[in-house]
Image (spheres, one colour):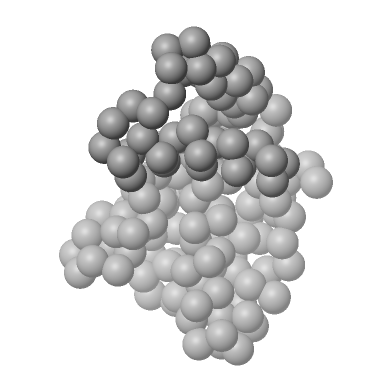
Length: 154
């Protein structure tokens, strides 16, 4: 794999650094086919992956305690990880960078809560999950993780 990386860096970055196309046209075609061949089996970003049909099973007590031990950082990590899992299941939650922007974080939490509603097949409503996160914080995360575990198959 390092050889592939070195070749891609050489081929893709050198023309940018020097400001001109350093490769012959036949070399460009070879590189293009090489990149297409190597990347064709990668899943598209932000697309639904039909192979993923569940949320990861996590211990709700660990979700709760790790947030206190890490002074809240694990809560952000947990939110991003579960957001990615829900997006793979079709939720459509935007980037978690919105969590650090005042007022946009409330919007993000609402959209996250609608994802919880979708993934749990309405066993936990968006309003309930939103209130759990807003009012109970880490305890709300543990309760939501418990719901994720109920629908988890692994």
